[in-house]
Amino acid sequence: MVTRGSCKKLFVQVIGFLQKTLKSSRNIQGTGDGDDDGKIVKGSDPSKFANLISKSADQLLEHLHILTQEALDHADLTVLTGTIGAAALLKNCLWSFIQSMSDSKSVNAEQLQAVYKKYNEMCEALAERLLDLHCRLLSLYILQDAECLDWEDDKPFFESERGSYTVQMWWLYMQGTEYQLTCLTKLKFRFVGTKEDLWNTVPPKIAQRVFSGMLNESLTILTVRYTQSCPSEARSQLLVVDISNLLLCIAQLLPSICDTAKDFIGLSYHNNGSKILRDIHTKCQELLTCLLLRGSSLNDLYKVFKRGMGNVEMFKPKVTGPAAWIIFALPNVFKVNPKNVCKMTDLPIDVAIALELMVLLAQPQPNWALLFFNLFLNVTAESYNVELQRKIAQDFDCGSFLCSADGTCRNVDTSVPVLNQRHYYDLVFSATEVLLSMKRRIKSDYIVETGVKPLIEAM
Image (cartoon, rainbow, N blue to C red; front, side):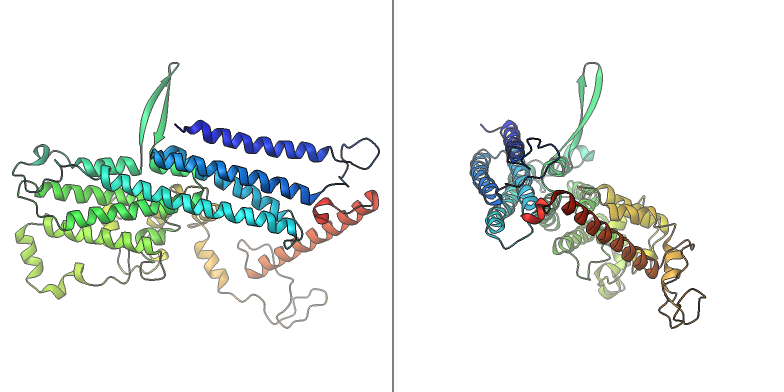
């Protein structure tokens, strides 16, 4: 039986190999004076190093194949996710070795690139197998319950005091739950679940793809089930409760697979959005329509439909504004129904910040660009837009030395609170000049003192 210890042992082997390689490289002949501390290796053999890396990587790849097969035979999700993490770690190590070589077309670089390609293909294949295994577990076990799915039963489910088990177990499987662990009079809380395992073990992008595939596939089953069911009068309330709970759960899971709040609320639904996100928004809209038609009274339905199907808002194509189901599922965010919303800036600032924070906190890794955007969303948005509308330069003499007075003068004022395009250009240009000057100075001083070129250029 393969356990998490196997994956841990694999990481130890990789680290041990890297340490052994570094130790052996330090023992190679140095400058010849017997003191190798701080000296540069003259007799290094890049081809030998590349061969050692290639052979050890092939052996570890074979070991990962064995772990994968045993994990699939026993349906062990823990070992399978750990194997993907190990393969991704080794792939990143190979990438760092390739980047350290100055000649990307050399024999050594091509040898490592071939091994890197194998690991990349293995990570993709393992991600597909992991998604397939999760979807099978969801469809065959989690979403099946004979008592909850008996829509023709004349007795209400649990006296109409709760929803079905399937939606509850689906939520716990997808999001996870928090349990209390007592250890030496101290209380510790640990969050466990599929999402938490993916976020902690699998690379971020692969984790998002697997989780989005799970959400989309399971939502397909649930949407077909609830939209095509014909419940008895006693079970009609169960259907309404389940759909309401389902939409509330999806609103909490969806930010994990979105990059921006625009994707989250469906503003990019018609403009080059992700296919999976479009599918999820479409299915949720179908569930909301089913909820309104099944949960409304006949008197209310008559008042709405007596004016004709063409006048009913739910059947009209929605081009702008947030998705209707997301407004229903986030009552604490959307306290009023927003109108004439085509972009995020059309929303109230508190609503926009709340949506952006929900997406930011649900990401599998820190998103510094999104964090920066949230911090300055309310402070600098208006003043920055004003500055962007101004001309970068004007045709007048600023009084500085050698000013051309033709609109190309780079003597700009840096005391303004908001920088414009010209400020950023000057900052990047100046920083680049400084770095290039430092590199040339350090390189020349190094060659003068040692008489050799840097090791990274020799490779």
